[in-house]
Amino acid sequence: MNSELKTKIMLNTKDMSAGSGRPKPVMGPGNHTIRINSITFDKTPYDSEAYNIMLHVESMPVEGDFEGFYKDMQDQSKGRYLGQVGRVRMSPYPYKDATLPSGREVNRDQEVLKSMIFLSEQLGKRTELDAIEADTIDDFMNKSSKLFVNTKFFNACIGSREWESNQGYINNDLYLPRVSKDGVPVESQDVDTTKSRIMTFDKATHVKALVKKDTPAADSSFEGTTGSGSDFEL
Image (cartoon, rainbow, N blue to C red; front, side):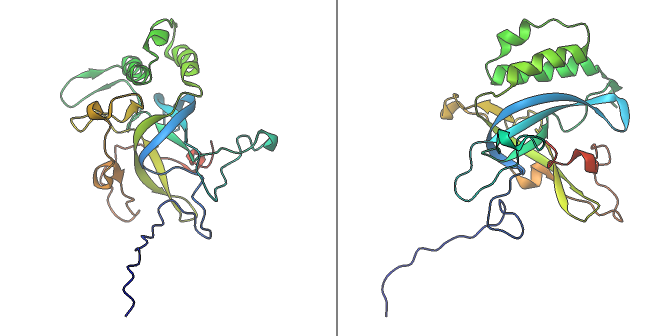
């Protein structure tokens, strides 16, 4: 009898593309180490008064047999991303003036400012953010987004709402979970690990599973994503 102990190899497909053994070039939900390549302030397709803060992010370089998306499809000489990329909404819900069931008034512009303050404090950009003055929220976002271009890598917990494309593929509408007793969705890598408050990804909590069209939606208030908002268009 062979007495040698063989190491058990655990197989996993979560980061692979169908038809190949390569890691996917697009990011999925989970705990990631990322950086921001750009930020856009996007009007929702169904409500001209509702906006999303969209973080265009990239993971740390992926080793091994990996081929990222081109940085510019019109100019492929710029090369490919070295890591996975994704479009991550700053909030699970769009920013809009509203009155909550509790009666509390929500001001869109103030909520946008609070979100940018949170991001700036986590990434050490608060002083620069406070120096910005703008007449409109669009102008403010145009100016402040430049502070975060090509940031240092930081830790993030990214959630998702699954949606089905016209071709039947399941895609992820990525977002940052809200700050809660469970922690924060983004955090600098410089934070002492003993004091870290970064959320630990939990699929049951942070992924809103696909609901088939013939099944009543569990959360109809969550923003849908059209095909034009695919993670593959960065």
